[in-house]
Image (cartoon, rainbow, N blue to C red; front, top):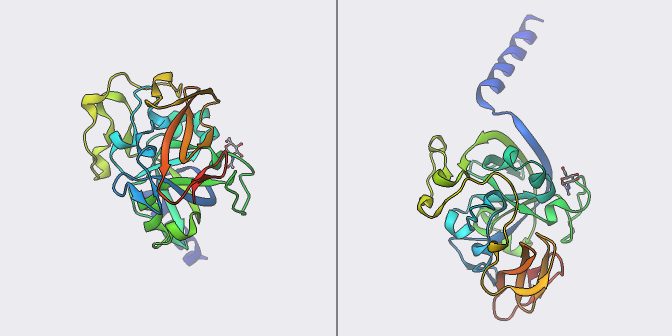
Length: 253
Ligand SMILES: *[C@@H]1O[C@H](CO)[C@@H](O)[C@H](O)[C@H]1NC(C)=O
């Protein structure tokens, strides 16, 4: 008895001392949708995807390129939109095959597929399945090099109550205590984002004219388009020899 209670107290102490509280967790599938370092990979190009503004910075319209880090993670967009301040910039710990990531991953964007269908589904469905969306480089690292071949990887995750990236205008970037760095984009920032309203000015130059509902996806020829500010906006172009497939959850193949 004595031993048991001592062991339990020790365990509680260890957990309390080292772990941040978990504000959300789940299991499902990891996919990739952008990459800052490897712009062309897996038979596709992330050129347009990288230009897309992230949901956590929709007022200042910080694009993935401007954030200049592959550690941005996209989560269930319904959940994110309902309470952005709870999730944006929070650290994400991802487990693949029992291995926990120690990367400086943080919530920065919304993922349509991750918010469609049942949150408890364990069957992959490109139209909707629980999970997270990563940079190609990070998913490849998490999966031990199988991101291209597999496309989606079984993961579980925890979002911790620990802000490692600030999205507030003038000082956007990794918090100093996170020990990681990203390029300083502060000079291009202005107002502090306070809502998730997506501005029409998010539209990149060559958007097509059809009105759409925000964050929906479609194929337009060989281009993957996302609806931003009710305008179809190019986010990625399929490399030569592959074309856009998958309708509302497009991919290059
Ligand atoms: C996404 O989040 C919403 C709101 O929290 C939840 O109702 C829904 O089940 C989630 N969907 C998935 C696929 O996780």
